[in-house]
Image 1 (cartoon, rainbow, N blue to C red):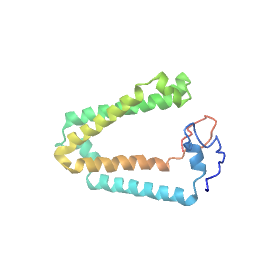
Image 2 (image 1 turned 60 degrees about the vertical axis):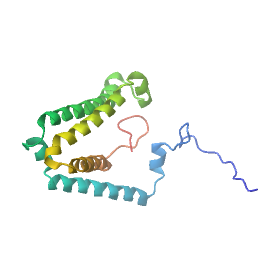
Image 3 (image 1 turned 180 degrees about the vertical axis):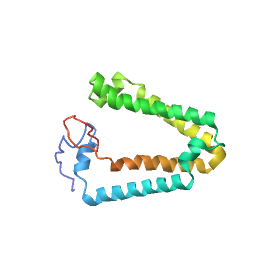
Image 4 (image 1 turned 90 degrees about the vertical axis):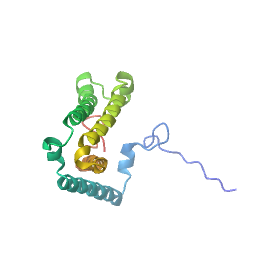
Length: 171
């Protein structure tokens, strides 16, 4: 019987559950993998820009008469709560409270992330409902494409890759 030999796994590249850490995975990626990711991100961003131009996305949200303005304003409030939660977690806790470890979020403020998730989902549903009179069945598709374009646009933000806890260290 051929059984695979045991080989030691470096503890720096994996967490307690055997999953590769983000820093280890970013350094071990090939140039073609990173280029492929950037191309996919660029396609999503260009698609989002095309859809925003094609359906007059921002002018429709801000000025169009047919949108349900009350529902849209409630959606904007939900998304403002999400942004406030992000600012709280990413700026206030590390800079004012000096809480550098993100693992402590679940102890120090356990309800912030679930609250942001609920607020984001409710905000997305309200955005669709508020623009339904204008875009109809295309509203979920339009918002999904715009959301994906926003997420993938973060590929082009220069992040630092230092490991000492200084600055933003996400890759």
